[in-house]
Length: 96
Image 1: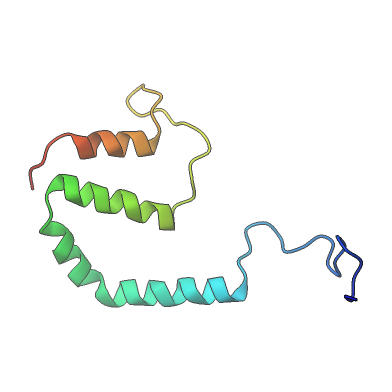
Image 2: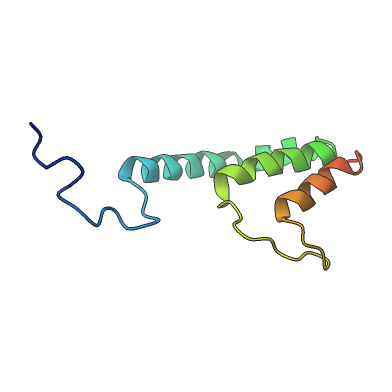
């Protein structure tokens, strides 16, 4: 039998919202160091891509670095989300 009753823990309030566990925080810090150490090479590699490819890569990376938008924002008086606007940019033009 466990230490606590089922559905009840020793910390009823739990971890505060937005606080990452120690392993997640360490992983993020390690990843940030890898990016920092390779930033010049990453920039050079991105410049070799077409504008569409570059935007596609940036869009994919935002999933890992930015929180998901919960509301729409107005860009140029439209009701598009940032993701929709980036997708539109990605779909238009293929030049470097």
